[in-house]
Length: 316
Ligand SMILES: Cc1cc2nc3c(=O)[nH]c(=O)nc-3n(C[C@H](O)[C@H](O)[C@H](O)COP(=O)(O)O)c2cc1C
Image 1: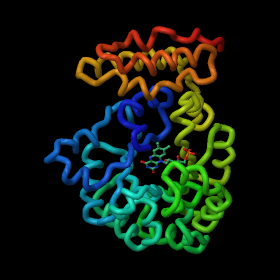
Image 2: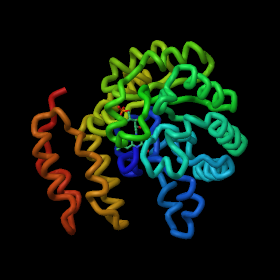
Image 3: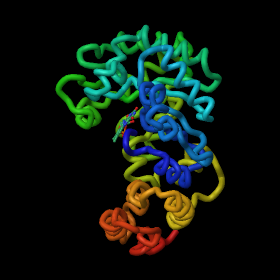
Image 4: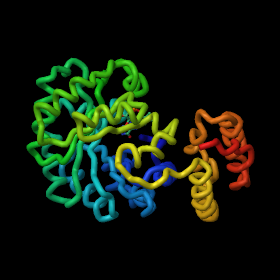
């Protein structure tokens, strides 16, 4: 998620769950290919080995550029390369990538094929169920069929359409209705394709329900705002018998990371902003959150900001 799942956020989320697959923010092929003049290719691709398993999400539509960037990602150690066919922002449409590519199934299929030739790791596609008035089930099935035939290893389907004209990206995440049944139908029609569902999913109970018919569940906003949901996922979803860490254990482990990063010059607020939801729902969470929000960006702020006003350890 753009501006959210940067490397600090992912490092933090990985402390909660060993097994969930984490995704980068969308990175455009332009940023990666022309990035080294500006020195930011490394910034976009950088991740900590602790973040595995991790998928790199690319935005682009030129098959050769997509293949080149997939190779950069695979060489860097990413476990999966994903194509964004879901983002509806104007900037993305002008660049001819994101959700508008749902109208060009052949082009996306060519990207998938070129990327599959270039890398050994899985190549996956994140998509919507439709765009504008191209929202019939037949069009979705054509799109999904074309990329499947090209070798796409999994589809992650945000179960709502996007209105490319008229709605902002934020509105496009809330206003078009969720149609989970469309994704379930897609799985019935493409039984050999790995299909994960996304959109509005907030609990592990719902997740388990979807896993009866689908192959995966992607959780976006809830995992960011209430990251604790991931701590239980290892046991409940992945069958890992080990005890989930406590919130304070997660924070302690993150403090070590924060200290290392502060020493390299990373501002505290670049890291602390991602952990505001750690104590969500616990007594004292609001005061802690407020303290972080007001203090972490001040000059010279250090790790003591994260531990002052800590909520009391909840009873098991
Ligand atoms: C701040 C923000 C940034 C996002 N950036 C991306 C992105 O870079 N790539 C992408 O595929 N989806 C992006 N999304 C969409 C989410 O991945 C997800 O599809 C959407 O929020 C619906 O799922 P949810 O209800 O579980 O959040 C973003 C969502 C948010 C809130």
